[in-house]
Length: 224
Image 1 (spheres, helix red, strand yellow):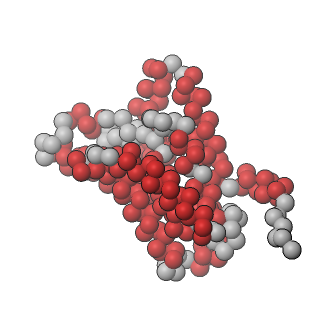
Image 2 (image 1 turned 180 degrees about the vertical axis):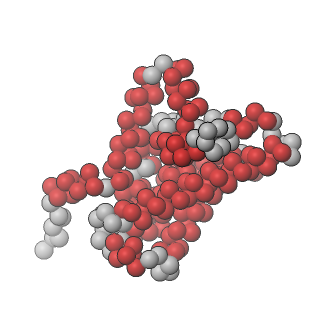
Image 3 (image 1 turned 45 degrees about the vertical axis):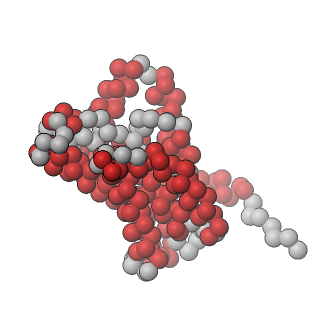
């Protein structure tokens, strides 16, 4: 007897409780917003949410919390690609639970940003970057998405679905890691995000997560 699939109704009703749904929806909504706004408004928005050294200064000189949070929702290039890649978050929520998934990608996003901007500061101080690099616009969901792809490629269920996310990483790799040998800030951040996602996956695999998080992850697709 052929296995029956669970009805779609309950799954659809659970979508609003899934943070992956809202993140993908927000990225998709940014596509028409950024296309319809006047160019000067788009530039002003990106400049304000940018995670550059100027914005990451403590208040009142900067606004680090706002820029770290909102920059993950405002792409710079290939706006239509990010909602597609962000679908990997559904697999991450299914594997880790909602709270653990959000905490994991947020932690790696912040860590990658702090690391790369620290690298920019170091390079400015040592003369390998001009002082203007401290205010170079740096926004986008790429650190979040690369972290999610790494987690989905290693922890998604069923196991065969991991091949989909591995393929996405392979397709995006030339753009994500181009310039890594030259120390390009975005490429370095993508590498840190990938390694961070793999580290979280390893922690989950070897039982280093709190018991509640491990328990939440045993129900595929259910928010934790």
